Image (cartoon, rainbow over all chains, first blue to last red; front, side):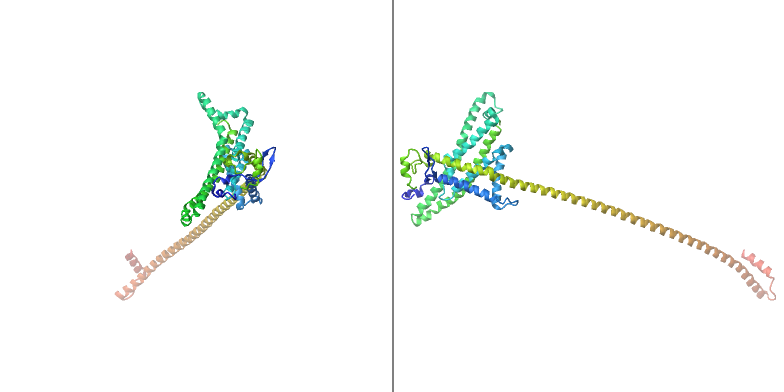
Length: 255
Length: 183
């Protein structure tokens, strides 16, 4: 960072990945980077919170335990709402996804912290995990019957090929839309935040008039920060809801 | 960022190129590392969630649900008992009230009968006394009437003696005359 004065207000700089521990296996770079660090941190914070808060197994919950219970019941209600009771077999997966994405988004809100979910490869991998689960479980459970997913019932025979093509395209675009939605939201939010915060820094360097002019971007930065907290939760929720809906397809392909 | 690994990266064909000109999220040189660490961290997270955290929270919630259900059942049982107690109390109260009413009614009718008989006796007594009195009155009247005759005859005799002077008329004659006058 030192020696590159542009970094201070370069909105893209926060997404750079830097090595912490170099590691190479079979000619492929698997270095432990700042991204890896924050993945581990995300998991550690979420796990510690959930384990410690529920340690006492209080019949009357403490505040922390109540939060853990609420997150449990929130995800459970979301999953049960869209995939039904037999969808609860995927509860550990859906809960892990929600908590991981939510915690990664929230940690990303700390200044100087790396946002794991602002990397398309990460969100795409999570989306592929969901779609992979849907596809594998769908074929495992229903065999070829899973293909009914692409042939909606109650459609006139003449239109079936067209509808099926559309359904296949929509199915294939799911991992893309699922991953790009989360990635783009986090990326755009953090860039916007950085740009407005950068204005404040630049303007305050221009003397008294600049300081006065910096009030507006400062207020905007505060407002966008609040908005980004909302987006952090909302995108984790949207990711979870869509996951639940796709899992419902795997459970009941003939819709 | 730091350029300590810069030399290393430039020598290697593959590997994370720091501060490469490209947009970092689209820099595919970082993908293997990100994927590996994502798999490791998310894998551990998934394992801990499914083996430890979720069963634990699920258990807590279930315990609480059971406890609440048990408490509710106990409460409804106690309520039922209370209702039964109230019902039996109320029926006992109603019984007692009926009994009390009956007793009062009996006592009243008994008293009434006694009063009635006492009054009847008194009335009878009074009637007897009345008839007795009436008899004695009528007897006295009759007696008085006979005395009236005697007095009248005596008085008449005396009057006649005083009026005509001399001797008194015969008693029988006077009586006869008085009786005739009285009739």
